[in-house]
Length: 66
Image (cartoon, rainbow, N blue to C red; front, top):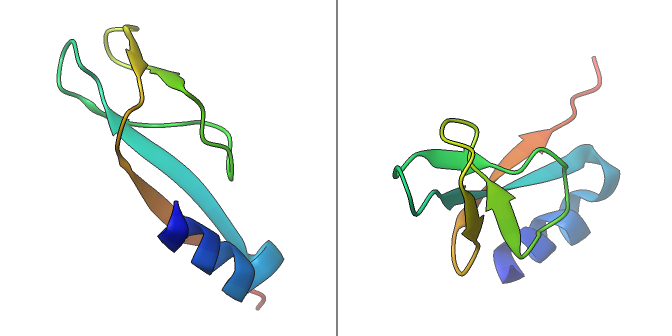
């Protein structure tokens, strides 16, 4: 969370954080659909199992102006 918060502060509206977790049923690495929100539970896109998110990581997506 601290690292994600750091990116949000540093890059503001240019950054979108997508939190990731591992499904406890099938082991698939999943990404939450909604940017900049960390939920207590996530649904696996492969087996549809609901997993309590106790730890995970995130993906940083930057908006680039061209």
